[in-house]
Image 1 (cartoon, helix red, strand yellow):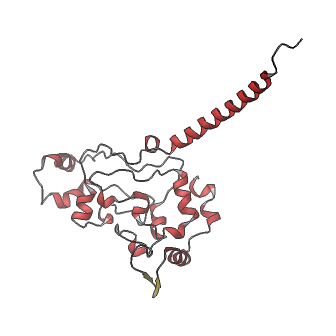
Image 2 (cartoon, helix red, strand yellow; image 1 turned 60 degrees about the horizontal axis):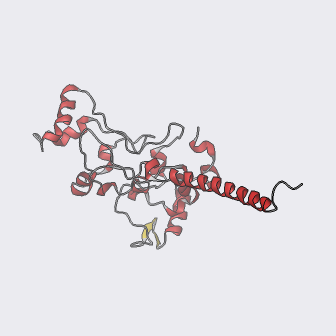
Image 3 (cartoon, helix red, strand yellow; image 1 turned 90 degrees about the horizontal axis):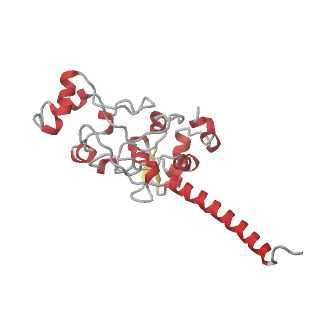
Length: 231
């Protein structure tokens, strides 16, 4: 005796297909969620003890990144400026500004300001600022238009796929070392040709490949190897 109607086979197959599609859709949604600012925190401005404006100091006053981030060319860490760096200027200007009282108190007491870190990589990721700078990677390649930020925020996702895109195609991003800290630098395909060692380059790929040789950038296989960043 037949218990189930013949249509049961079609229903069963349809149910399996729906389950597979549902699981696949859920996985896809989770992967896309991982890339959103909700997870990556990209674009989110964090509270700081003092509302420091990079736009004012970099664009308005023309202060070079290295004046505050003194170790960025020699160390794996860019360095958080000590209060003394702020006081170099603010002992002369804006000396009574109320919002700068935390800076003055820090200098009087010797207790460091507790800045909230904006660009934060996981502890299992090894990153060295000096290597990237010496290979011709500009500050704004990773940090975005810092010179236009009244309040600092994380511009990129800083997820592995973001790093791998550059490591796999470094010729798209490299620039002459003297332009690393130039926040308004334009690639040759966007502006004027770039001259390096007497050679003029009008497209980024040619320039990038020349700089890869000059700066002895390791092979794609080396810099995409797991133990390059996970040590």
